[in-house]
Image (cartoon, rainbow, N blue to C red; front, side, top):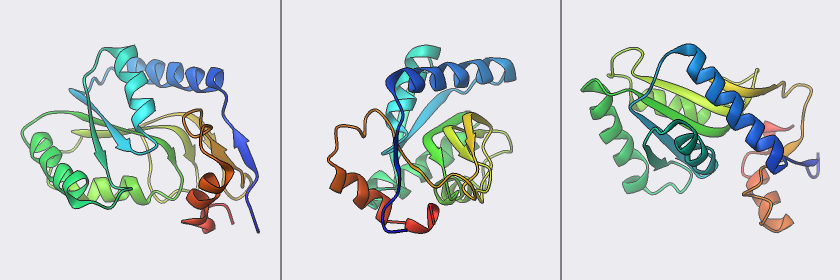
Length: 171
């Protein structure tokens, strides 16, 4: 595939996804001590979830590949989880599972159940599972590159650059 099909997620659809996550969280009766927005795509959803639930938000960024803002913060979050705090990691999409598995690896010594994961969209073919999702896709069928409202301000070249970082996700 030369270029992906860019499919915009409208603001109304995004707000519906946030509502779906809030309902799923409420139904589970598991309440985290903190939401953790995964930079860069999970920051906006985590902010909205924080406002909708009243749960404080932290953030970590593996996408920038700067250890002080990624691995070092994950180590501190692992310490908090080991001390008994519950963390809900929030991202926009669980596509390949690489990010979620990296977080799980970093929190490997934390007690079971101390960390959960929420995404707006979950690829059922991902190498990682999530606890909460608003929508599911099957990458063997759906090849679109989803453009969330906060990405819609980027120019097409920037969006295509994000896609081309790992083009096999939609291949």
